[in-house]
Structure formats: C-alpha cells, structure tokens
Length: 91
Image 1 (cartoon, rainbow, N blue to C red):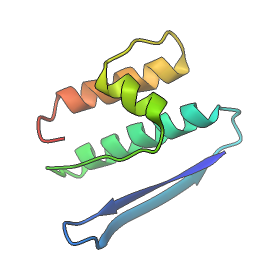
Image 2 (cartoon, rainbow, N blue to C red; image 1 turned 180 degrees about the horizontal axis):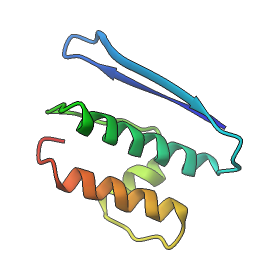
Image 3 (tube, helix red, strand yellow; image 1 turned 45 degrees about the horizontal axis):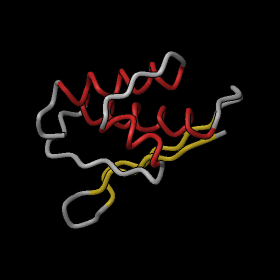
Image 4 (cartoon, rainbow, N blue to C red; image 1 turned 90 degrees about the vertical axis):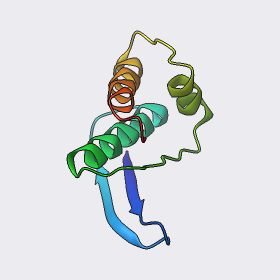
C-alpha cells in the first residue's frame, strides 16, 4: 500500500509533496486516514494556518465530521486527527 500527500499554496503552487509506501497490510481506508493524520501532523509541525484538507473517502470525511468512534486502528487514527483539528481552530 502507499499514499501521497500534497500541500499547495493559495495560488495552487506546490509547497510540499510526500509519498510513502508500507509493507503492512492495512485496508485502503486505514491507509487513507493515516495519510490524513500524517498531513495534519506535518501542517502542525510546520506551523501552517488556514489549512483545508481534502479526501475522496466519504467514510473518512463522515467519521471526522461526525466525530464517530470506532474501536480499531481506523478509529485510533480518526481520534488522533480529531485531537489535532480541535487544537487548531483554523484547520
């Protein structure tokens, strides 16, 4: 499995691009929520503000928007995402 992360500036220019692969056997949704978590951590570590995140996974978007609880690895990543988002009102 693998994923890519792209940060763009206000005018669409690339700021940061990151890709990663793993030998672990995660599901597609787990891989994607991990990519979102990693992008949140990167944005936080670099002090980015006014950040918008996009995903084509309705499951992940709904889980984050509705603060749903899942008792598995997916849920752990969603909860970590929610913690970072809660700490940054401009995300």
